[in-house]
Length: 227
Ligand code: NI
Image (cartoon, protein in one colour):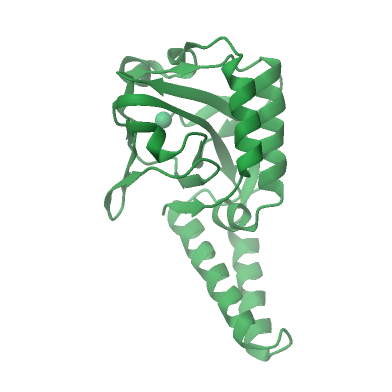
């Protein structure tokens, strides 16, 4: 299941992010790639331990903390500190799957990558190519969103970034360990939550249908969640 989350960052935020990122020294993106994906990866990143990465990453995590769609779709347990990459003309990332387990830098924790997120920091008219191509259960999806918008998708998916042929594509990306490991269960809970919200628009909050559906959602979450 792919979910688009609009306006995670405002236009002002995006402009500030871009201004800070322009001043960074960019390094070869192979530094955070696994063995198979390093061979497929041609892009640039800013160092994970730089002040800019930490500061901007923290801003994204705060924005996600207030975002109901992210909570409903990802059911996050732990979020990896956001990374930042760019693809200039001629750069691409061929089909690969991300590492399943990642040590979280500066902590003793490891994180299981259940949900992948890409937050676009360039507008579609700033570059050609550069689509995020995801192999979903319904076939191949091609994603290119306005700056400030984000897509979340299961980390189990094969995915690629198609070659950029003009301009430059900037983004933040990171992984989430979800309380719900299984994509199919997570998708069911997301759809269930959407339906509850629709029902609440049509009926008063104390209506037995709203109470019953809400109770069942929480009881399913209680049964499936791992903390
Ligand atoms: Ni990847």
